[in-house]
Length: 406
Image (cartoon, rainbow, N blue to C red; front, side, top):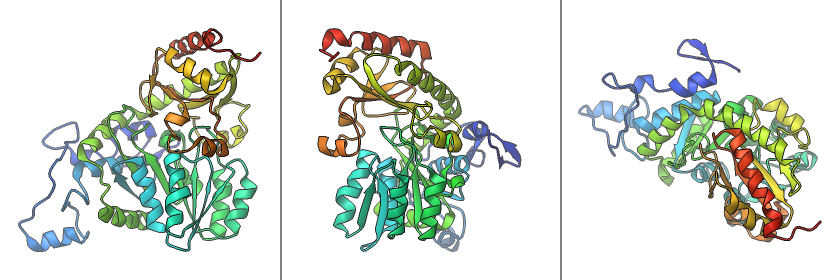
């Protein structure tokens, strides 16, 4: 595991996920960071107050701008991603939209891929064009086409890897080089990989984005988002968020911090389970295809092996029989929440039409290469064999419930 300097020593990401950013904010012997609910922070010295307000001295002024508990969360993610700075948000979509609207202006051009998360796709399909931003959405697997579109002009290259929900993997180093030739900024959604498995900043990205709601928090009890990168760029996003107002709540920050203490353990288990389950699913007669970058059959397996330390806790698979098979299969699972979430300690499953791409029409999903018979399966921390047993009993009963073509 790659190590970085922390507290004067070389420590792993696992140790950093437990300790990073916390010691300065532990009060009166407490071993846990306090939840600071105060909206405002007072100063008897007006000149000191002014220096803090201008950012020349450490401190907090108003909860919409910053908060001690929130700052610890930002610092922990910053250290895990090896970034100069970090800024948090109320949700992952707030992080994504703030990043795009901070750096794009009318007349600018953004190049992206067709496989982004459904909410992100809506920004590219509907919202940015209303502000006269030119958007080019490329076939995710066609790196030559992406490079060609970057060459035509690009202010921001927006990438997501692995993608949601079909787990495509992008060659970050190659695409970053193409963006650099045009002076474009590169944003990477690292939600599926997490800082444990991948660090896009090390591969040349300018900003890395997380929906902290997912794997970072890991317990499906707090919404949040975060952006990491160079201080100059993050400060611009912070200034936009300061006015736009999508601030992370301190209680959510506390819950995310608590979840992150076990991040490396959860990801280790989820990596191992997802790969084992993906291999098992490849051999089941009711499964048409398995989407997981850890499989040698995955078209981007070599790229994933090069730039990732683990392949992640999410896989997808398509069922013979399409959406009717999905309707029959999902209620048969015993150890999976059927819900629009992922990255939790419990396994979560669902089709894109009700989860990642509920905002999109069936035609839009088809254009993105998402079959209606696809199941997104976010592996929890349950015992791997129990999950396989659960999948087996639900899949084996499918022929009884629907008529599957021979």
